[in-house]
Image (cartoon, rainbow, N blue to C red; front, side, top):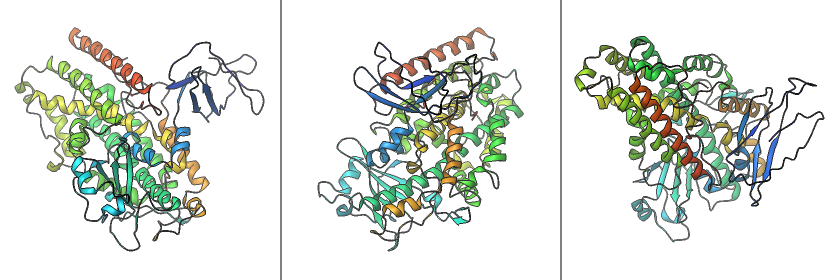
Length: 525
C-alpha cells in the first residue's frame, strides 16, 4: 500500500487490494519523500477499510507524519467512541484496559456498600449470596483515593471520587456493573447508582469511576509499579554488579533509557507545576498522597502475575486476555531466566556466596521497598529458585507489565469521555438531577483535554529505535550456552506472538499489548 502526500487542504485516497488479507489487527502507513516537495509533513485523519468479506475497519490516525519511516496504527479510539457508554465495555476495561490490576473476585460484600438483592437484581432472577458463592461477583475498590486533595485547574476546583464498583459475570460471560457508590462512606447524599436508574444518572456514575480509574492507575499501576520500580532495579544493578557478572549481562538490556525517561518525567510531567498538574484531578499534592498510599500497599506477590491472579481470584474469569497472555509471557521469561542462570549457579550455596548478587537484592529491599518486611520482597537469596523468580519478576515488570499498562493509554483515553482525566463538577448528591447539560459541564474543559490527549498520545507512542522483548543487539553474552538459550527464548516468543495474533483474529477488539512483537525490552517511554 502506498500513501501519497497531499497538496490541497483535504485529500482522499482509495487503495485497492485484489486479495483478502484476513482479519486486520493493524495497518502500516509510509509517507514517501517525493523529490518535488521533500520532507513535507502529512496529517492523515483515518483509514477506513472494507474487506471482500464485508468486514469494516476504521483506524484513527490524527497525527503528523514527518519522516519516511513506516508507522503502525491499530483500531482503538474509534471503537471506544462507539462503545464507551455500554456496560459490557465498561466491565471489559477492568480486565483488558489500561488498569487490569484492581479488579478482584468478591467473596463478601464490603460493609460500606449496603446493597440488597432487590437493588442489584430487580428482576428477581438472581440473588447476591448465590452469585457470590458461584464466583460471579467482582469488586473494584478505589479506597486509595479517599480524602485525596483534588487539584485546581484554571482557577477552578476539580473533583475526584473514591468509588466502589460491584460487577457481575452474567449468563453471557460478560462482566457488567450492577452497583456504583462514588464515595467510601454510605450516606444519604452518597447514593448508590444502578443500571435501572435514568440514563444520565447511570452514565455520570460510570464517568466518575473512569476518571478515578485514570488518576489511580497512572500513579499506581503505571508510574510506581513499572517506571519507579524499574529505576530501583536499574540503579541497584549499576551500583552492585560489574559488567562481567552474568546477572548484569542478563538485566542490562531491560534498563535501556529507564533512568533517562524517569528523569524527564520528574522534570516535566510530575514536577510541581508540571504537565500532570495541568490536566488531572489528582495533580499536585494529591498525586504525592496517592503515591505514598500506593507504596504502602505494594507487595512482592502483586508484582508476580501468577501469584497476583490467584490472590485476586481471577484464574477462571472468561475473556481476560491480560491474564492469558501475561501468564504465558511470565512462563517463557521464567524458563529463559532459569536455564540461563543455571549455567552459572549450580547450587544454592553458590547463590548464597555471591556477595555482589546479595548486595543487589539487599539494596532493592532497603531503598526500593524501604526495608518493609510486610512487602514480602526478599532481603537476600538463599536458593537458585528464589533468585530465578525475582529476576523473572524484574524482566516481566520492565517489559511486559509496562507494555500492558502503558501502550493502551491513547487507545482507551483518546476518546476523552471514556477516560476523563478530571471532573469539573461535584458528583451528584441525589438521583434525578443529572441531565445531558450537566454531563457536558462535568467533563474537563477543552484546554485541559488538549493537554491530556497530547500527553497520553506521546506516552503511548513507540520510539523510533525501540528494541523489543528477546532482541539483544548488544552482545553481552559470549558463551555458547546462553546464546543458545537466547535463541530458544526468541523462538518461544515468536510462537506466542503467532498464537496471540490467531486469537485476536476472531475478536471485535484485539488485545495486542502483550504480543511480544510490541513489548519493548525496557521502560523507555
